[in-house]
Image (cartoon, rainbow, N blue to C red):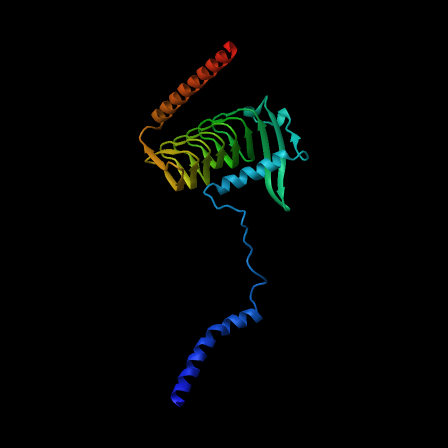
Length: 249
């Protein structure tokens, strides 16, 4: 009988010991409170680009703080374009100067630019250009050979020229073509498909169609553009037919 009581007490002691540290933490918590969980935040592959877009669009929508850049202060490739500038500050932190360009931009070779760039149009660069800050474009982007970029995101297609180095990410809503010898430090992501030659290197990649290896980027681009032109012609013809049919009715 005594042995049974001893075993029972030992068992109850073991069970009670499981709650000792919990009670101690409850009475003397190490943390100030429960960890905050933002249920509205989505973890997606394109989060860095989405966050940049969101913040720059909010900055663009602000009426105050923007100043028109004088013609004599613009580089040659921004002449005759409407350009505004603003210092990007959030919560007291200065992120740098932002230049907003309204229109299509063509950058000559060997250009160096050290400001955050919003291009409200298409964007194209020559060879051996260097962009030290983020680029956000709403149109198609063509990056020339041997460029050096910090990051770029676009609402349309993106072509990255031979031997181009991107420190962080390249991001596009449409197809992305990465040519021979390119290097992307962190992430290449497309909402449709990424075409790349075997000589390219990436930190990681993501697209619904995956990473599609190809031997000739130029040929793939020509084929895709031919298909797009054909689709555009068919769409225009269909619209014309529908318009004529409605007029007859």
